[in-house]
Amino acid sequence: MVFGWYIVAYLFLAGAGAGAFCAAACACAWDAVRRSDASERLARTCQAGFYAAPCLVLLAALFLLLDLGNAQRAWLVLATPLQSVMSVGAWLVALLVAVSGAVVARGLTASEVPRSLLGACCAVGVPCALGVMGYTGLLLSDLVSIDFWHTPWLIALFVASSLSCGIAVIVALDAALAPPSYAVSRGLWRAGAVLGCVEAAVLAVFLVVQSGFTDTARASCELLLSGALAPAFWGGVCAVGLALPLAVHAAGSLLPERAAMLGSSLGVLVGGLLLRYCIVAAAFFTPLALGAI
View 1 (cartoon, rainbow, N blue to C red):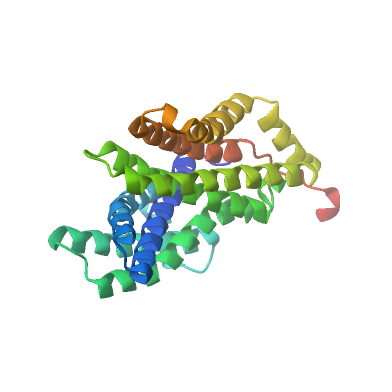
View 2 (view 1 turned 120 degrees about the vertical axis):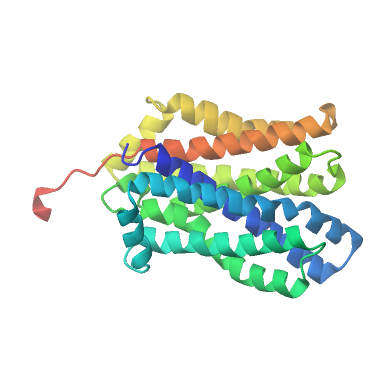
Protein backbone atom coordinates (compact mmCIF):
# COMPACT_ATOMS: atom_id res chain seq x y z
CA MET A 1 0.00 0.00 0.00
CA VAL A 2 1.15 3.52 -0.81
CA PHE A 3 -0.26 4.65 2.56
CA GLY A 4 -0.82 2.52 5.65
CA TRP A 5 -3.77 2.08 7.98
CA TYR A 6 -2.91 5.29 9.83
CA ILE A 7 -3.76 7.36 6.77
CA VAL A 8 -6.85 5.24 6.05
CA ALA A 9 -8.12 5.92 9.58
CA TYR A 10 -7.15 9.59 9.25
CA LEU A 11 -9.13 10.02 6.03
CA PHE A 12 -12.18 8.26 7.49
CA LEU A 13 -12.26 10.00 10.88
CA ALA A 14 -11.54 13.46 9.49
CA GLY A 15 -14.26 13.05 6.86
CA ALA A 16 -16.84 11.67 9.32
CA GLY A 17 -16.12 14.40 11.88
CA ALA A 18 -16.34 17.15 9.26
CA GLY A 19 -19.56 15.65 7.90
CA ALA A 20 -21.10 15.52 11.39
CA PHE A 21 -20.20 19.16 12.05
CA CYS A 22 -21.55 20.25 8.66
CA ALA A 23 -24.85 18.40 9.20
CA ALA A 24 -25.27 19.89 12.69
CA ALA A 25 -24.45 23.39 11.43
CA CYS A 26 -26.93 23.10 8.56
CA ALA A 27 -29.63 21.98 11.01
CA CYS A 28 -28.96 25.03 13.20
CA ALA A 29 -29.05 27.31 10.17
CA TRP A 30 -32.37 25.76 9.13
CA ASP A 31 -33.71 26.39 12.64
CA ALA A 32 -32.58 30.02 12.47
CA VAL A 33 -34.51 30.47 9.22
CA ARG A 34 -37.64 28.45 9.98
CA ARG A 35 -38.01 29.15 13.73
CA SER A 36 -40.51 26.33 14.29
CA ASP A 37 -40.89 23.57 16.87
CA ALA A 38 -39.87 20.94 14.31
CA SER A 39 -36.74 22.82 13.28
CA GLU A 40 -35.79 23.35 16.93
CA ARG A 41 -36.15 19.63 17.66
CA LEU A 42 -33.99 18.86 14.62
CA ALA A 43 -31.32 21.31 15.78
CA ARG A 44 -31.30 19.78 19.27
CA THR A 45 -30.96 16.27 17.86
CA CYS A 46 -28.12 17.34 15.58
CA GLN A 47 -26.18 18.78 18.52
CA ALA A 48 -24.65 15.31 18.79
CA GLY A 49 -22.74 16.22 15.63
CA PHE A 50 -21.11 19.17 17.41
CA TYR A 51 -19.98 16.90 20.25
CA ALA A 52 -18.78 14.12 17.94
CA ALA A 53 -16.89 16.37 15.51
CA PRO A 54 -13.96 17.46 17.71
CA CYS A 55 -13.55 13.94 19.10
CA LEU A 56 -13.38 12.36 15.65
CA VAL A 57 -11.19 15.06 14.13
CA LEU A 58 -8.79 15.02 17.11
CA LEU A 59 -8.49 11.26 16.76
CA ALA A 60 -7.84 11.73 13.04
CA ALA A 61 -5.06 14.22 13.85
CA LEU A 62 -3.55 11.64 16.20
CA PHE A 63 -3.41 9.08 13.40
CA LEU A 64 -1.78 11.68 11.14
CA LEU A 65 0.88 12.29 13.79
CA LEU A 66 1.46 8.55 14.09
CA ASP A 67 1.89 8.32 10.32
CA LEU A 68 4.35 11.23 10.23
CA GLY A 69 6.41 9.36 12.82
CA ASN A 70 8.02 12.16 14.81
CA ALA A 71 7.37 15.65 16.13
CA GLN A 72 9.84 17.29 13.74
CA ARG A 73 7.95 16.16 10.64
CA ALA A 74 4.67 17.23 12.22
CA TRP A 75 6.14 20.67 12.96
CA LEU A 76 7.32 21.02 9.35
CA VAL A 77 3.79 20.28 8.14
CA LEU A 78 2.29 22.94 10.43
CA ALA A 79 5.07 25.49 9.90
CA THR A 80 4.58 25.55 6.12
CA PRO A 81 0.79 25.82 5.71
CA LEU A 82 0.85 26.57 1.97
CA GLN A 83 3.67 24.30 0.86
CA SER A 84 1.67 21.12 0.31
CA VAL A 85 -1.86 19.73 0.25
CA MET A 86 -1.19 17.87 3.50
CA SER A 87 -0.13 21.12 5.22
CA VAL A 88 -3.29 22.92 4.10
CA GLY A 89 -5.38 19.97 5.25
CA ALA A 90 -3.64 19.84 8.62
CA TRP A 91 -4.45 23.50 9.23
CA LEU A 92 -8.06 22.97 8.17
CA VAL A 93 -8.28 20.07 10.62
CA ALA A 94 -6.77 22.24 13.39
CA LEU A 95 -9.23 25.07 12.70
CA LEU A 96 -12.18 22.67 12.67
CA VAL A 97 -11.07 21.23 16.02
CA ALA A 98 -10.80 24.74 17.48
CA VAL A 99 -14.21 25.88 16.21
CA SER A 100 -16.10 22.71 17.12
CA GLY A 101 -14.30 22.59 20.46
CA ALA A 102 -15.45 26.15 21.22
CA VAL A 103 -19.07 25.17 20.56
CA VAL A 104 -18.75 22.08 22.77
CA ALA A 105 -17.00 23.96 25.59
CA ARG A 106 -19.70 26.63 25.60
CA GLY A 107 -22.44 24.02 25.46
CA LEU A 108 -21.00 22.16 28.46
CA THR A 109 -20.63 25.30 30.57
CA ALA A 110 -23.96 26.94 29.71
CA SER A 111 -27.51 25.77 29.31
CA GLU A 112 -27.60 27.09 25.75
CA VAL A 113 -24.96 28.25 23.28
CA PRO A 114 -25.55 31.94 22.41
CA ARG A 115 -26.83 32.32 18.88
CA SER A 116 -24.14 34.88 18.07
CA LEU A 117 -21.35 32.47 19.04
CA LEU A 118 -23.06 29.59 17.27
CA GLY A 119 -23.51 31.67 14.13
CA ALA A 120 -19.90 32.80 14.12
CA CYS A 121 -18.61 29.26 14.69
CA CYS A 122 -20.81 27.88 11.93
CA ALA A 123 -19.73 30.65 9.54
CA VAL A 124 -16.10 29.68 10.13
CA GLY A 125 -16.57 25.98 10.78
CA VAL A 126 -18.70 25.02 7.77
CA PRO A 127 -16.09 26.20 5.21
CA CYS A 128 -13.43 24.39 7.25
CA ALA A 129 -15.58 21.24 7.36
CA LEU A 130 -16.21 21.38 3.61
CA GLY A 131 -12.49 21.95 3.10
CA VAL A 132 -11.61 18.92 5.24
CA MET A 133 -14.08 16.72 3.36
CA GLY A 134 -12.71 17.81 0.01
CA TYR A 135 -9.13 17.65 1.24
CA THR A 136 -9.43 13.96 2.13
CA GLY A 137 -9.94 13.27 -1.56
CA LEU A 138 -7.57 15.98 -2.80
CA LEU A 139 -4.73 14.50 -0.74
CA LEU A 140 -4.88 11.40 -2.93
CA SER A 141 -5.89 12.91 -6.27
CA ASP A 142 -3.02 15.40 -6.06
CA LEU A 143 -0.51 12.53 -6.42
CA VAL A 144 -0.04 12.50 -10.18
CA SER A 145 2.16 9.40 -9.98
CA ILE A 146 -0.95 7.27 -9.31
CA ASP A 147 -3.42 7.33 -12.17
CA PHE A 148 -6.18 5.62 -10.18
CA TRP A 149 -6.43 8.61 -7.83
CA HIS A 150 -5.86 11.33 -10.39
CA THR A 151 -9.45 12.48 -10.97
CA PRO A 152 -11.84 15.04 -9.43
CA TRP A 153 -14.39 12.24 -9.08
CA LEU A 154 -12.38 10.93 -6.13
CA ILE A 155 -12.91 14.26 -4.34
CA ALA A 156 -16.64 14.11 -5.06
CA LEU A 157 -16.75 10.51 -3.80
CA PHE A 158 -15.05 11.36 -0.51
CA VAL A 159 -17.26 14.41 0.05
CA ALA A 160 -20.43 12.36 -0.49
CA SER A 161 -19.11 9.59 1.76
CA SER A 162 -18.10 12.07 4.48
CA LEU A 163 -21.54 13.68 4.55
CA SER A 164 -23.18 10.25 4.65
CA CYS A 165 -20.90 9.13 7.48
CA GLY A 166 -21.47 12.38 9.38
CA ILE A 167 -25.24 11.92 9.32
CA ALA A 168 -24.77 8.26 10.27
CA VAL A 169 -22.78 9.35 13.34
CA ILE A 170 -25.60 11.66 14.48
CA VAL A 171 -28.35 9.09 13.86
CA ALA A 172 -26.37 6.31 15.56
CA LEU A 173 -25.72 8.45 18.63
CA ASP A 174 -29.36 9.49 18.81
CA ALA A 175 -30.57 5.91 18.38
CA ALA A 176 -28.22 4.72 21.11
CA LEU A 177 -29.57 7.27 23.63
CA ALA A 178 -32.48 6.62 25.96
CA PRO A 179 -35.04 7.69 24.93
CA PRO A 180 -34.05 8.45 21.32
CA SER A 181 -35.99 11.05 19.37
CA TYR A 182 -37.15 8.79 16.56
CA ALA A 183 -39.45 11.35 14.99
CA VAL A 184 -36.59 13.78 14.47
CA SER A 185 -33.95 11.22 13.55
CA ARG A 186 -36.20 9.77 10.85
CA GLY A 187 -35.72 12.87 8.69
CA LEU A 188 -31.94 12.68 9.05
CA TRP A 189 -32.09 8.96 8.40
CA ARG A 190 -33.92 9.54 5.12
CA ALA A 191 -31.43 12.24 4.15
CA GLY A 192 -28.70 9.67 4.76
CA ALA A 193 -30.45 7.27 2.39
CA VAL A 194 -30.47 9.94 -0.34
CA LEU A 195 -26.78 10.59 0.25
CA GLY A 196 -26.15 6.85 0.06
CA CYS A 197 -27.70 6.78 -3.41
CA VAL A 198 -25.58 9.77 -4.44
CA GLU A 199 -22.45 8.08 -3.10
CA ALA A 200 -23.24 4.88 -5.00
CA ALA A 201 -23.75 6.83 -8.23
CA VAL A 202 -20.50 8.78 -7.80
CA LEU A 203 -18.63 5.56 -7.00
CA ALA A 204 -19.95 3.96 -10.19
CA VAL A 205 -18.95 6.99 -12.27
CA PHE A 206 -15.51 7.05 -10.64
CA LEU A 207 -14.86 3.39 -11.53
CA VAL A 208 -16.17 3.76 -15.08
CA VAL A 209 -14.06 6.86 -15.74
CA GLN A 210 -10.91 5.37 -14.24
CA SER A 211 -11.37 2.07 -16.09
CA GLY A 212 -10.90 3.96 -19.33
CA PHE A 213 -8.22 6.35 -18.12
CA THR A 214 -4.93 4.40 -18.37
CA ASP A 215 -3.82 0.79 -18.17
CA THR A 216 -2.56 1.35 -14.62
CA ALA A 217 -5.86 2.85 -13.49
CA ARG A 218 -7.72 -0.02 -15.17
CA ALA A 219 -5.56 -2.51 -13.27
CA SER A 220 -6.56 -0.82 -10.02
CA CYS A 221 -10.25 -1.06 -10.95
CA GLU A 222 -9.84 -4.74 -11.78
CA LEU A 223 -8.15 -5.30 -8.41
CA LEU A 224 -11.25 -3.87 -6.75
CA LEU A 225 -13.86 -5.56 -8.92
CA SER A 226 -12.40 -9.02 -9.42
CA GLY A 227 -9.02 -9.16 -7.70
CA ALA A 228 -7.75 -9.56 -4.17
CA LEU A 229 -9.73 -6.55 -2.90
CA ALA A 230 -13.05 -7.77 -4.34
CA PRO A 231 -14.31 -9.30 -1.05
CA ALA A 232 -13.68 -6.06 0.85
CA PHE A 233 -15.15 -3.95 -1.97
CA TRP A 234 -18.25 -5.99 -2.80
CA GLY A 235 -18.89 -7.33 0.68
CA GLY A 236 -17.84 -4.33 2.78
CA VAL A 237 -18.33 -1.21 0.66
CA CYS A 238 -21.20 -2.25 -1.60
CA ALA A 239 -23.11 -4.76 0.55
CA VAL A 240 -22.62 -3.46 4.11
CA GLY A 241 -22.04 0.22 3.38
CA LEU A 242 -24.55 0.82 0.57
CA ALA A 243 -26.97 -2.05 -0.06
CA LEU A 244 -27.72 -2.97 3.56
CA PRO A 245 -28.71 0.56 4.70
CA LEU A 246 -30.88 1.02 1.61
CA ALA A 247 -32.49 -2.39 2.19
CA VAL A 248 -33.27 -1.41 5.78
CA HIS A 249 -34.87 1.79 4.49
CA ALA A 250 -36.92 -0.21 2.00
CA ALA A 251 -38.08 -2.59 4.74
CA GLY A 252 -39.58 0.39 6.56
CA SER A 253 -41.89 -0.55 9.41
CA LEU A 254 -41.09 -4.26 9.20
CA LEU A 255 -38.08 -3.75 11.50
CA PRO A 256 -37.86 -2.16 14.95
CA GLU A 257 -37.14 1.51 14.37
CA ARG A 258 -34.29 1.79 16.86
CA ALA A 259 -32.50 -1.30 15.56
CA ALA A 260 -33.04 -0.21 11.94
CA MET A 261 -31.54 3.25 12.51
CA LEU A 262 -28.61 1.97 14.55
CA GLY A 263 -27.86 -0.98 12.26
CA SER A 264 -28.01 0.97 9.01
CA SER A 265 -25.92 3.81 10.45
CA LEU A 266 -23.23 1.41 11.64
CA GLY A 267 -23.29 -0.19 8.18
CA VAL A 268 -22.67 3.21 6.58
CA LEU A 269 -19.71 3.84 8.90
CA VAL A 270 -18.17 0.42 8.23
CA GLY A 271 -18.64 0.95 4.51
CA GLY A 272 -17.06 4.41 4.70
CA LEU A 273 -13.96 3.03 6.40
CA LEU A 274 -13.62 0.15 3.95
CA LEU A 275 -14.18 2.49 1.00
CA ARG A 276 -11.09 4.45 1.94
CA TYR A 277 -9.13 1.27 2.56
CA CYS A 278 -10.05 -0.12 -0.86
CA ILE A 279 -9.23 3.15 -2.64
CA VAL A 280 -5.84 3.36 -0.92
CA ALA A 281 -4.98 -0.33 -1.26
CA ALA A 282 -5.89 -0.52 -4.95
CA ALA A 283 -3.34 2.11 -6.02
CA PHE A 284 -0.50 1.25 -8.39
CA PHE A 285 2.33 3.62 -9.24
CA THR A 286 2.31 4.66 -12.89
CA PRO A 287 5.31 3.19 -14.74
CA LEU A 288 7.87 5.84 -15.68
CA ALA A 289 7.94 6.43 -19.42
CA LEU A 290 11.37 6.61 -21.06
CA GLY A 291 10.37 9.82 -22.82
CA ALA A 292 9.87 11.53 -19.45
CA ILE A 293 13.49 11.05 -18.39
